[in-house]
Amino acid sequence: MFSKISLDGGIALVTGAASGIGKETAFAFAEAGVTGVVFADANEQGAQDAAEKSILCAKNPNYRPIALKVDIASEDSVQAMVNTTVKEFGRIDYSVNSAGIGNISPALAPNIDVDVFCKTMEINIKGTMLCVRAVTKVMSSQEPVTYTSSRHGERSIGRGSIVNLASINSFIAPPGMAPYVASKHAVMGITKSAAMDCMKHHIRVNAVCPAFTDTNMMQASFQRVPGLETIVNTATPLRRPAVTEEVADYIIFLCSPSASYINGTGLVIDSGITLTAHL
Image (tube, rainbow, N blue to C red):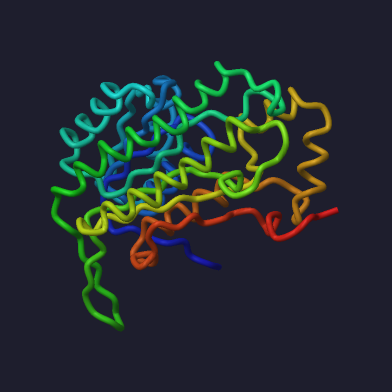
């Protein structure tokens, strides 16, 4: 049996933690052995329910979860989330920016709805920027952490790790998805820029770029767009969408000492769909 990556303590802050990839990632942190996880979401009750459930899979005997309501598009709300996290736990070792919205309009370029475009930018781009800004400010002033390898001794793994939720649409553009595609390209831009800006503080900033993933958001898309489920299962080399665990596992990897030399990258999780056309 293969063993998953373990984390020796640390505090994780996850937005979008009431459902989908964010929720699975928060559970994965608990399972990996962190000391605390902040479940942050606009859905406060959903975050609270998930936080309570995470205790069942926690490996660290000192594990403690908390739930916070956050509007990632609000500067004050994001700052309050980060302030509360530091007040409760003293530091932030891992920050995962999973909150966002999907493609909410199938309009092609000549008919793009400006309000839809602006709403997508407000949440996916501004929200990611605000979270990265607030968290890196905290991380830059906290003590770095070291890791001791049985073969290579002690090495610094820095002051923190941030993972943004990008998409394969950070690199490719299907029709009828201009606002979402633009926003996810921008998330990769934020990731790369923050990685450059924060190198001197030994803060790593990466992104995961999943393809179709089986979440409530995707199931809603299947209901809204006739034939989409068939398209997903046909276009994907494995003939299925990813399960949320398959994305969360790589987020934990990017936060772990195993990825201590990875910075500013977008890890594509797509079973090979972006390699070529699949018929």
